[in-house]
Length: 323
Image 1 (cartoon, rainbow, N blue to C red):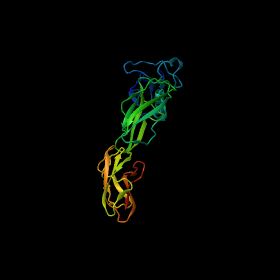
Image 2: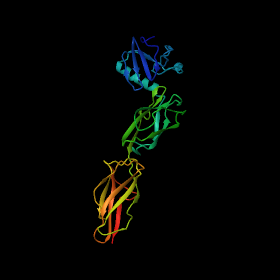
Image 3: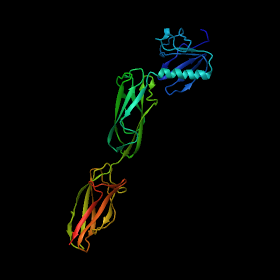
Image 4: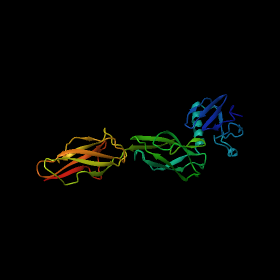
């Protein structure tokens, strides 16, 4: 062949392109675009490792397959090129080999940093458009890479989806129980390796797992406007139910005096490890004022995020009437 020696067989398998160079050089271009190459003569094409084929009769002058080679794997013969030019051409050809598969992300149901109540389920629904030239089938899937936002990490096979058509994938997830920011990364994979989605090799789910605090007023042993004798000692037991998602522990939750004076002690009462769905009773020790009149004082339940509403009110209260 004119122009010098060349390699008649090149393998394209397992997501990489192998360029065989004369006299005995090779170069690998993997799916990430990594390239190591030396030499100045090579021929490039497709082939299976187990069945080498020769395409020495296909040598287009303009570096594109000639018409008589159109149905064969593309072959390019280069000679006497500088290493820099050879690298550029090799990268161009490698990109062309992988160009058949591509996708576009149309929508995601969970935008980045979406707040999800800790321990609660949520769904991530991705909708894609097949922007490539091949139809997706059994050899295409969405695969977990790293991280943990609480989703199932099993590979998600893609169904048949023709070029130009949309396809959606729905992942079932549960927000981690410990509050914080969580993310995980996924990748669409086809027969030739990772598929670019809008130019990116990965998809990311990122959520903020947060607690929800809520309380319900269950009852009080001293109903509003209860009559008390002047100077008489009495006690009030106020019971609340934890309707949130976090446990009321002594280090973060307590019952605090806010205002007024119905004669009760104004110390702070710590919660005692009340799990969601359980009840907490706070007992106030009081002495009715000496003067006749109506007296009220307000208390609040405080947590890490501030005051917890109690059945829609910011406080619980004691109201007595001294005769």
